[in-house]
Image 1 (tube, rainbow, N blue to C red):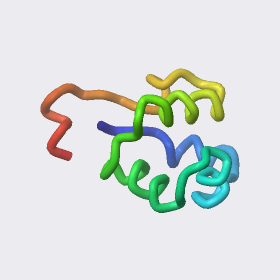
Image 2: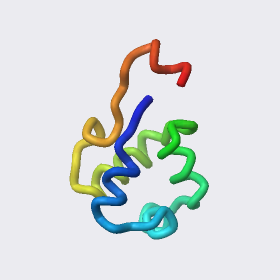
Image 3: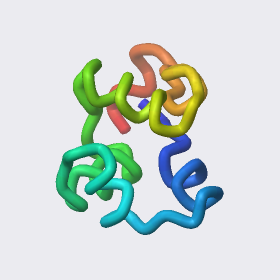
Image 4: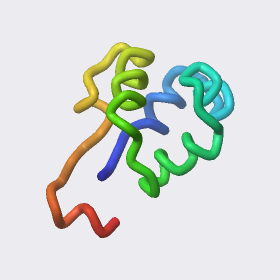
Length: 70
């Protein structure tokens, strides 16, 4: 699954550490999500959407089964 997390974070001038603290996760979690190595829980996805005041679909782009391999 692709995402726009890095783009949204950088638009707001936030570091990975600052975003992690705001969301209550580790910096490593943010790094993994931005690199597409980790899909967040639904709870965290909602938290991110609320933080950035966007829909979950505005952060995460699901391309179907083909996209699952990376």
